[in-house]
Image (cartoon, rainbow, N blue to C red):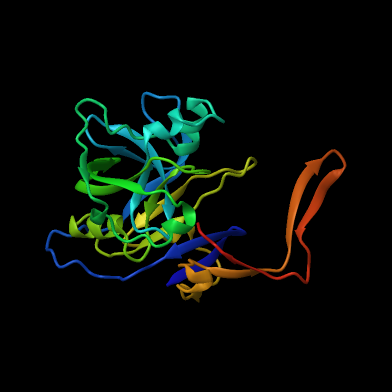
Length: 270
C-alpha cells in the first residue's frame, strides 16, 4: 500500500509493504536511514544521484536509485561504458552512477546463476538483455553491510542510467535487511528530495518506517495496481494536462505537452 502526501507543495511517496515484525531479540530499536542525494563515488570523478553503496572488496562505490517495480539490486558493468560510442567514459559513468568491474584483482565477486535473483517481471519492459548475477558484500554508511548479497549486472542495452535498488514487494534488499536484524519491518519510507536549482535538498530512504519530519498535510492511501498495462504499477494516475515551462526574460514560456481534455494513463515511479 502506498502512502501519498504533500510536503511543502511537493509530492512525497511512501511505500509500506508487509509490516512483518522480526522475531529476533536483537532487533534494532529504530528505523534505518539511508541518505538519498547527490553522491560522488570515492577516488573517482563520478558525480551522480541516489544512495551511495560500496560493493565487494576492495570496495567499488556506486550510486543506486530506489525502484518500486524491481525486486533485485542491479548495477552496471564496466564494459557498458567502454562500448558506448555516444558518451565519453566519464560521462557514461556519471550517468550510470559509476560501474562495477567484476574482473578487478581481489574483487570478492562470486558469479552465480540468474536464479539467485528474485523474479523481476518488469525488467523485460525495461531491457530485453539478460542480466549476469553474482554475490557480493554490500556496504553503506556508517557501518552497515549485507554479506553474500545477490546482485544483477547489466552488461548491455540502451538508455540505461543509474543502477537500481529494488524495493518492490519481493525486494531482496528489504528481506535481507530484515533477516540481518538491520530493521524491524519489511517496508520503507521514501522522501525523494529535490533537485530544484533554487531550493535543492537531499531526501532519504528509511528502512522499517518513515521520517515524521517530512510529513505535512492530509494522508491519502492508494492500493498498488499490479495489473496496469500488464505490469506492476506503483501508482496509476491519469494525466489531464502537462505543461513544460521555460523561464525567459519576458516571463515563463509554456509548451503544452498534453492539452486539457486529453487523458493519458501513467505509472508514477519515484
